[in-house]
Amino acid sequence: MHGLSDIMSHAGLSGYAEVALVLFLLAFLVIVLRVYAPSRRREMDEMARKPLEDGTSPSGPGARP
Image 1: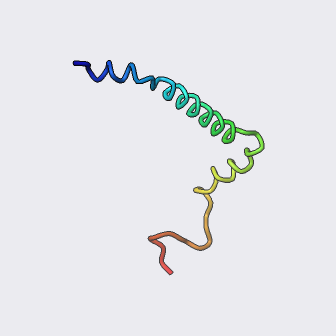
Image 2: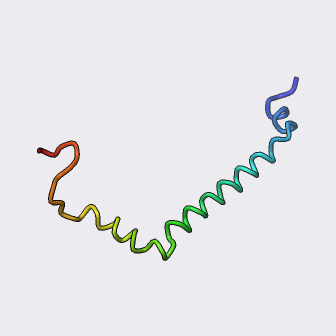
């Protein structure tokens, strides 16, 4: 009787794990480069100040008309 670990080790699925790891690392690098790109600095600064801005018209679920 073969155990599950024996069956899985002989199934030849290790290539899929390696491909998944490479895809994950590529996606992670693309996201990091896009977030920290110097060309997006102004946009990121604007988004960072958004919560501190005073709005003239309140909006949201608790706002009164």
